[in-house]
Every structure is written in structure tokens, then in C-alpha cells.
Length: 326
Ligand SMILES: Cc1cc2nc3c(=O)[nH]c(=O)nc-3n(C[C@H](O)[C@H](O)[C@H](O)COP(=O)(O)OP(=O)(O)OC[C@H]3O[C@@H](n4cnc5c(N)ncnc54)[C@H](O)[C@@H]3O)c2cc1C
Ligand code: SF4
Image 1: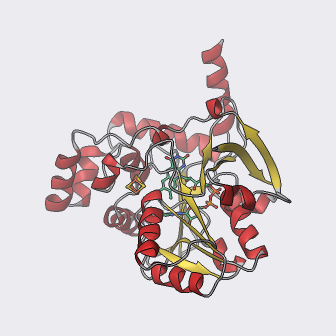
Image 2: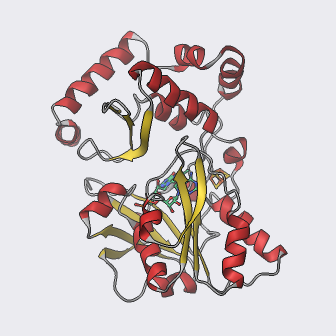
């Protein structure tokens, strides 16, 4: 039977570097304690999302943070297969479709999955890497400096959980003034750049493919960052016994609001048009047609920037919520 938990790691540094409450760090630490190996997604120096193998926490730490683009699983399948053949404990993390593909691969190769733990993210869909690279190049052009670090889930703005941050070689940084006013996020969240298969994802349902599912945990008026952990199998349950480094509370399924456990994202009616313009006329043209570069958009952006500079975004949001409820 599925069990649902909310979780927040007790190490502040882990919380800061993780997308939500640090569930992935908790689970991967448990595998390291058993002498095992962890697989997950990192951004390489060219900002390509790729899956790699980690034998220690230093490498694993690079897997923290969601990258909302398709990850290349490269040779991970072969490496997982050989680790399992050598009887290592293995934790493989990824999107549900990647886990499904890996389980199929291991089945085909007749490799036992007894020592394998699978951890999936509840998945909105993966964005286009090509679009993301154009987005980074555009930011570099504006800053006249090379990007050296990109974080999709920066916690720069107090109380905000999903912001883009880019650090440049010249020491400067871009911090999104708001999630929806960031150009990459606005297009990703409008579902315009998702992979075609994401609109008919067969994993967007209550029954899960992995031993453990992790996601953001949303609760009304909750300002702290919690992860949602769903334990789907006995194997997953065994990993979640003994000492848990953080707040770990079982919750009722009714408290879980995860649209992608019910249905995939809708395909926008202008998706084909968007891609036609992007592929034939280029990045700048789609920015003109789908961007926030209108007077209203610019005013919104300026307001968001002022709030960010004053570090009062969280406070203003709370005040607006309270006013709405009164
Ligand atoms: C593409 C994508 C879509 C998501 N959609 C949703 C959603 O709709 N709703 C929701 O509640 N949560 C979603 N999540 C999950 C959420 O972003 C966090 O991963 C989750 O809250 C766990 O947080 P954490 O603090 O444990 O994560 P972290 O410590 O930040 O761990 C990140 C984990 O995600 C994996 N990962 C990162 N990027 C990728 C990638 N490109 N492909 C495969 N695996 C990756 C890493 O291997 C690692 O296991 C999504 C994640 C991804 C990657
Ligand atoms: S939405 Fe479905 S098909 Fe798309 S990446 Fe996520 S799991 Fe895979």
C-alpha cells in the first residue's frame, strides 16, 4: 500500500541546495551508508543534462536540484547493469519514463533488480535542451560574459521555490525577478517546449513505476520547503526505516495535490505555431511573439525587480493572500 510523507531535511545547507525539502539527499545518503552507488542527473560544463554515477557524496551533490530539460542517460544503463551484476546496492533516480526504460533494459538482459532502488520525480515534463541552450546564450550575450553556473531551483528570493539563477564569469549573476517573468520558465510552464511524448505521458497516474516517488509538497499557507515522499513498495519502505535526518511526517493522501498523478500536461493549441516560428525564424522572433515584452509585461517585471531588491516578495505575497481571504 502506498504511504505518503512530507519531509524536510534538518541540515539547512541541504535544504538550500535541494529543490524542495532534500528527499533525494536523504534517500541517497541511506544508499551510501549501505556501501551502494547512486545514479542521477547533473548539468555538465556545457549545461547539458546528463545522468552520471556517484560513489560519494561530493559527486552526488551535483545531482541535487531539478533540471527541467531532458537528461541524456548515456551509458547509465550499462553501468547500472554491471553494478548490479557485481551485487552492489544501486539507487537510480530519474523521470518515470527513464525508470521504466531502465527496468525494461534490465529485464531484457535478465539482470536481477534485487539490489536496485528506483526513485522517480513526479513529472511535469522535460523541456527542450535546444531552447534552454538558446536561453543561456541569450543571457550570456546580454551580460557579455560566459555563464559558469545555472540553477533552475534557486532559493535566492525568500519564500520562493522555483526561480532561475545564472552566475557569470565576470562575477555578476542573473536572478529571475519572478518565476513567470523568467523567459525559460514562462515558456516551460506554458507547456510550449515539452517533449511531444510528455503530453500523453502514461506515467501521469496514481500507480507509480518506482519504489519511491519524490515531489514538491504544497500545503495552504506553508512557507517552508517540504518534499513529498511516496513510498510505493516494501523495498522503498525498508529504505525509510531507522534514523531519518529531518522532519518526516506521514500524511493523508487527501492532502496531496499533484496534478501529474492524474493526467499529463495539456498540449497548448499554439505549440505547433511556436515551433514553426522558433525553427524557421529563430529564438528572438519567438521571444517577440510569446514573450512578456509588452508594456504590461515590462511594468510587472519592474515591480517584481523592485520587490526582489527590497527582499520583500514573500511578505507582499502573504499580505495579498491575507487581504484576499478577509
Ligand atoms: C523534469 C522534472 C519535472 C518535475 N515536475 C514536477 C511536478 O510537476 N511536480 C512536483 O511536485 N515535482 C516535480 N518535480 C520534482 C521536483 O522538482 C523535485 O525534484 C522534488 O521536489 C524533490 O526534491 P528534492 O529536494 O529531494 O530534490 P533534489 O535534491 O533537488 O533532487 C533532484 C533529483 O531530481 C533528479 N533530476 C534532476 N533533474 C532531472 C532530469 N532532468 N531528469 C531526470 N532526473 C532529474 C536528480 O537525479 C535527483 O534525483 C520535477 C522534477 C523534474 C526533474
Ligand atoms: S512527462 Fe512523462 S514522458 Fe515526459 S519526461 Fe516526464 S515521465 Fe517522461
